[in-house]
Image 1 (tube, rainbow, N blue to C red):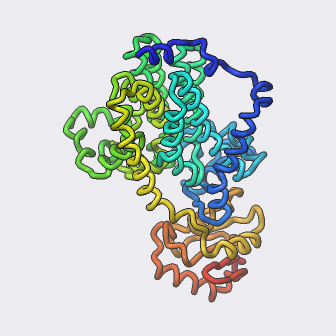
Image 2 (image 1 turned 135 degrees about the vertical axis):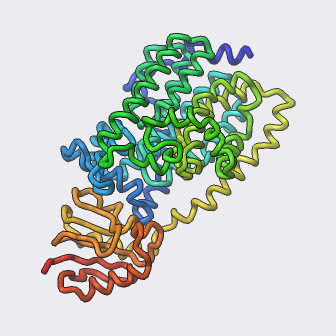
Length: 485
């Protein structure tokens, strides 16, 4: 218990004191960290270069960042009927991030994603010193972090602004432990810029602060997070959506109510609806994966359970979604819980006794098994596309600002333009001077409704029609140019 008190209340710890930028740059460990981050993001670079990315979500965010960096501030997405980028997830952080994208391109975007995820290790090392963990415990802590499915899944699968929550929420945890409230409020508002769902986690932070008897900080956190969520869900997202409702609401929480405005009324009128998700096996697999991913250690002690409260609010948010991918631990939707999960794990490891230590080492193979099982289903998306060389050659024949149509996986490297779209039906109106890039082997998310048979018919029509000119055909890859009548 003495370790917990010293760790949480000691504000004079060197590990938590801020460092000047000049001192940081002269620190050898800083350069080692950046070198490791370059190595860490190599798999995502390889995946991007080998045509294994997708419009959802790499292409979507790159197109938004390209639009913002070229002065199109609303960044109306060609993939969502012209809806502004903020209308999808209320991710305000895209605006400053657009400057980084303009300077570094998509590879720089993937690098800063790797840096954000890897920053979790830096905080874990600091927390290990704070709570006086032995070196072997620190190694176990970092190992569990690196193999946690949400971490490596977010690294490998495209780009998501959610990753910036790792350093920002970890720093927020430290500010609570240090009772550094000015820093806390700065980080609180910075976290709100990451994504529109962040207030769900920050609401949990408010509950945690109340339990820890930081009353006015807790109540104010609850008020601000609730107010921000209400402003996002009831005003901003409906205002920006072409349909006047929150984007993807029907596929996520539409089973509860037809809109966010009627959500609380629907729940209050039918309390039994709260039991509905708990009958689905995917929910229990998700919850088991979270607990097993940290070897069940944080659940041994009351002190560590308190820190899990913000993680729990985000977990419940995902559990009650009808969109099953929110319950896949490998996806980015669980990133907001990770800092609190591992802060809780750090505290629990500092309290391990000989009796619990024996169980802990017996349980350590379980996170490895969880990571292996998720990797088995996730791994195939990493292998290079068989037609990668042909797609590269065909894409080089398309002028920089020409309209481009195609498939999910053939378009994500061509989104740095204002007119780009996925073929969603056939026949579909395509403007003159547009290009269509197709890969006959790509059946996943192929055309959002175009069958293989219709795909074959479309190819025949393109080849026979005088309006279309075949610019390239090698193996399964086709590039057509619409020259008009």
